[in-house]
Image (tube, rainbow, N blue to C red; front, side):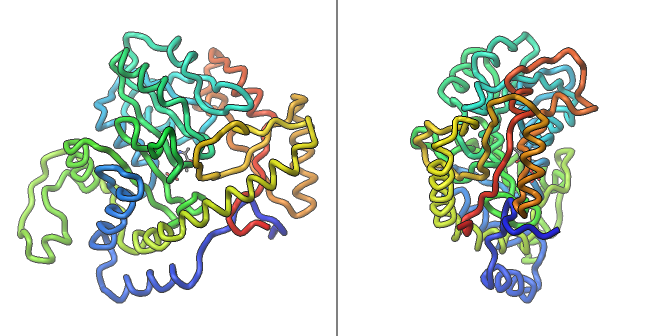
Length: 360
Ligand SMILES: *Cc1c(COP(=O)(O)O)cnc(C)c1O
């Protein structure tokens, strides 16, 4: 079915098409100069020292775990109100995800006080996810990580250019992870980025991204080197120049797109002002944000009415979604032992309404 008002619309025009064709005609379509330019531009926009382009954000989160030397038996505190990839990445390295509740229906981010209560001798890191591009309480989280000697990983998929006290999200913790999947603020089809300020982390990420090899095929093709060594157990997590070329156009459009999204959010807030049936999360937020999605939480706590409302909107040609079904309730994570009352309430009562820059 095609919706009258979809949940999301791509911000694509002839510029992305032209960028793809130009890259194809350049005859270099795998990782090369466009990827480099995409990284440099992205890092510059965020004020980060390094940005490393990857094939998606899930591998960025996996590399974050590897880089932070998290391994079997280690515990990593994470939200449950997130996309499954945030949590799956912890499992890839044999570590144990420890689910943390969110602050409230009005503040859908991971709760620092609950996080602190979950810290044990085995805790190695905290992963925060900036819900909808609205910042987690980073002062509290950097403080906790310093106090207990933990690593801080930011899943900043929802928040390119979003800010927390003058800093861009993804640049505050030890590493930041971004996604350029189709429905994100920056769309390249598939794509991701790892952002960091530490030179060694940057070097190691570049090695791990490409089989642990000491030189890249682009450098070899240009005669910069003729041979290579394999010095780490790496992966093929590379981005390619076709995706990077699309990403470069998307970066040029990002700021004006975020301004239009802020207007759409203001319209929603105004329209919903008169009802006390819903909580509008992050209504108090004063920071510049990406407005990746627009969630509302029904107050009456009846999953059936949430689902019926979604069905009614669907019949009117309006697409909605749920961000997110809590991860700790999925089959592979269900232990029956974890109870997160606020996350579970929100999982039953949240609706994500359409949000994109060209929404009228
Ligand atoms: C989209 C998303 C991911 C996964 O990104 P991919 O690029 O699709 O692998 C991870 N975490 C969050 C919060 C996301 O929204």
